[in-house]
Length: 368
Length: 47
Image (cartoon, rainbow over all chains, first blue to last red; front, side, top):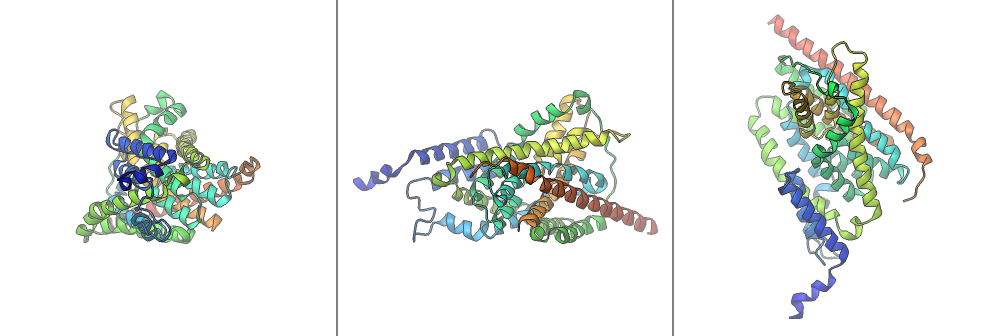
């Protein structure tokens, strides 16, 4: 009979805390529908790897499946890059191409990354600080690739923070936006003029972006390249079947493995540390200052523009796509039911996707 | 982990260079996109 309960004696209080964290993530995923595709596998994985002597992770000579998946798919950046093909195939750059000026907001909203780099450097060495700062990219694959390339000691906490905060964008951004804008500013209308975008422009755009980003930040060219490859599949018009597969089957498959594999880094002995709490705090700091950067930049631009922009669209420049764009649109409707900001905010949101990858490349340029 | 408040000031240069670089890159992308749109319109007129 002893064989049935002897492992129970190996349970530690830290593991029980991790089960609770896993439970909270699963609750948020199911009950609150916060990024369920990621939070649910991460939450379940957190419980799985924190069972005493869990066979899911490697112990000495005994190889665990999740550790093997981690080595095969995350340590070499394969999963995040493949996922980027799917994301690229999902993105319609149309709203951005019809109003390219919106791209500047995507750049401004990367402020949180660089500001957090300075803040994190007070506690961590520069490479770890840079890896933590990139949580502000609001883009899981970019965070994984940058933290991996910089050999950060905090990969697990960074990945968990990046994905958790992406799910929490609807909670984090609205109060910051409201704090920085007046009701009058939030009510500024931005009529959308539908402009036709030529097919040749849609096809050339991902190629040109890849070339330019590759020239500026060669270390991150795989990120941009995979994202834009996915988009080229979508826009070329002759690979509809591949585009559909990339958007649905491929992205879903990778997401299943990505979430649960990330959880392999959530073992209690590594995760429950003061450093982790500080990283979670700095990740939140980065998201808040991304939002601040975008909104304040739009307000500054308004000082010079005849045709004012609604400063809330600046907040959509973080790359949490498409949540951030939708939040701004919803906030606009709350102030004025006739104020439709969706096309502008989604345009800014996709530019944030491009800008965050370029910011990741710049960070790698600085510290590699 | 140690606490070094001066590191914040020392590393502000990365913030300056980083933000300037990203604004320049995105500016270049805007120009190229405008150019692509113009070329698209022109070829449509030619047709």
